[in-house]
Length: 69
Image (cartoon, rainbow, N blue to C red; front, side):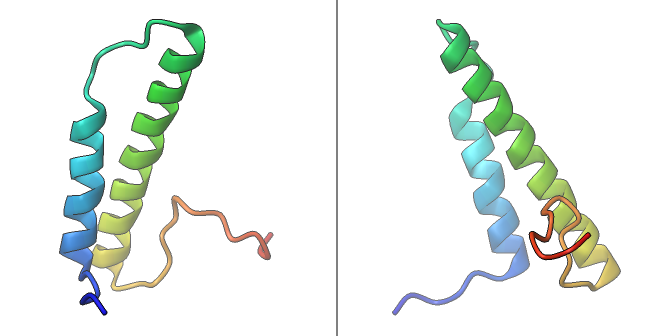
């Protein structure tokens, strides 16, 4: 079984995914919209993780609790 990632490693993986997507536009509206959504989602997840780390909280504000309000 692989080791678990710590918060910094998780952040680095999110950042690597963002870099892998790149900044190029998609050729079609479908592709371009998907790339923009992925960039936004990854950026929000990174920011939420950093805030949770700073607040010493288990709650990433970028992720909505499906059971919550």
